Length: 144
Image (cartoon, rainbow, N blue to C red; front, side):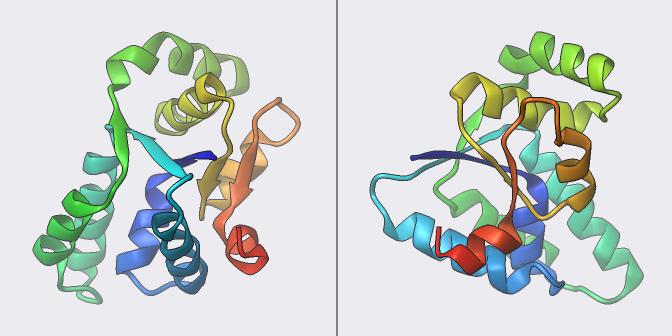
């Protein structure tokens, strides 16, 4: 099974929040299964970096460099945003979604795969628009 990961799932691995336990459980199972491929647009790297730096500036998180090295080692296949740009631009425009969110949705749509996210706003924004956006909280509980 192919899944597309949103940056919020990775951030939840490193910064304690309500989705952390579910993100850890989902990714541990995904990494243990040889039939599961995890994909993300390559913008995931700068999105995660930006989010971790934001948490670091608040003083509530201090492991940005260490966690970015862990991110580099995660078995996620990064797909070029250049390939996704036309579809992402259309999705963003048609559905009034952020360009960032649209890149993840464009990849999920192209792969006919679910988008796994910890961002409830993204799930709600994609609802009823033909996208398969799933909460990592639900996936973690289901043992998916």
